[in-house]
Length: 293
Picture 1 (cartoon, rainbow, N blue to C red):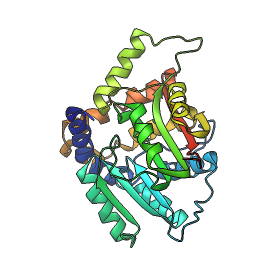
Picture 2 (cartoon, rainbow, N blue to C red):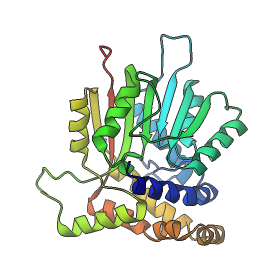
Picture 3 (cartoon, rainbow, N blue to C red):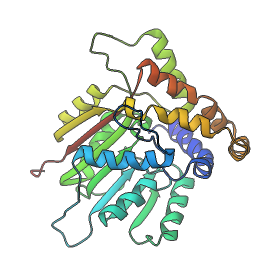
């Protein structure tokens, strides 16, 4: 990553992660509200449901391995370790999480120790475009809302493919913009302006469409590719987050977390509006690495 972008992302999550955990819990990602987005549920339960729905959708019911050792999971963009801990417990696996934020990595390791899982989980500061792992290391590579931060989408998917074991599974959920190869055509000037504001506030270099991700993954050699658009299923999440921010503790925490976090909080309507307009898409992609690798 470019040094400037690296620093922006690091500083954003260094300053905001504590507030997010205090106010909204360990899972730093969208929630799932049913295929039609109309299921009423507590927001934290919706976040756990998203993990389970992703596993079901991708067909990952277990992580069987021929080795005597436990399955190995990589969580790319791990936050404070919410998904890593959940998946490690579910599959009795070892999990490694990477993040650009030293604050997140330290808190994730702290939480793993507190849960008695310090030997199963480890978290480190690392660049997803240049991962510090050998080829063929992981049975599952999990990326939940981190792809939008990557300044080179092809290199990101290529690294995920590289560290997968033959037969291993990659599961990604990421922010995209709408496809541009259909009737709607290219992004309008107003849509590009809307995206530019999201990029600025959330430290994103750019996003692409799901068909573009699929083409990259296919060219890299991913097998059994699956894609889906869950925008409707997750869209209520931002309204829930906005509503939950209006309490005394959240406001005090926000005011003490710095301008970057305050700006992001004040701009949450950009995401909610993007979903309503059909501009923002919550996109899924899964695939396997060939056994022939």
